[in-house]
Length: 235
Image 1 (tube, rainbow, N blue to C red):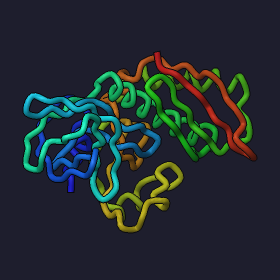
Image 2 (cartoon, one colour; image 1 turned 30 degrees about the vertical axis):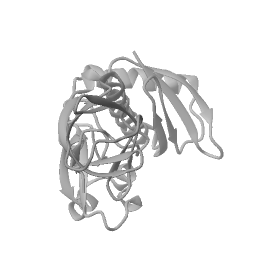
Image 3 (cartoon, rainbow, N blue to C red; image 1 turned 180 degrees about the horizontal axis):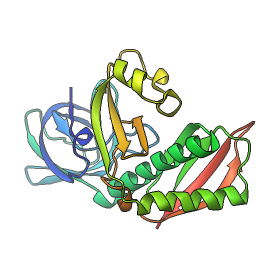
Image 4 (cartoon, helix red, strand yellow; image 1 turned 90 degrees about the vertical axis):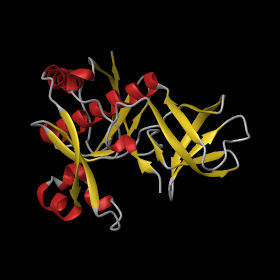
């Protein structure tokens, strides 16, 4: 099983690992800092280097383990030590947007009683679907201002492990939706925005809300009965 190093340290952009397995155009490493697509966050991109060759990482997926899809063929054989290099501007954008999404989810739940029911992060924009009838233009302006207040607060963002029983007993079930996670998951990774939000999440994040940057709410659309989609960008 691949050691998911990005869970402990999201700031690493270059690392060494050993090839465990190859399958056609896919590579399994003993450890990785490449984030696999999931939770509304796209997969990382970058390169794998070994023995004077470079392969582009075109996709990363997690199934029984993490599979890195490479271009170019003739993948490095099992046992080879490789260097992984992340496309850092892409990863950093995803980290900023993912932390912003947590702030927005907490804000909507606390002040509008609107639970998040979906989200999607890109490198230049993001959206969040909320269980809510309709946000007005005044609501959008208020949400944008409150989001930027939270950014300006420069609140630390941390993550740690928590056993499922403790999480179910101590965390807000409406926010974390632990009930949607498979029963086989006994240990959860909890991401906390100091004094504001705690939720289960396996994504990558910045270490302080100040790193998110200025938030601009760009609009809303109705998504069926009693659901609204908010779109936002970061400057």
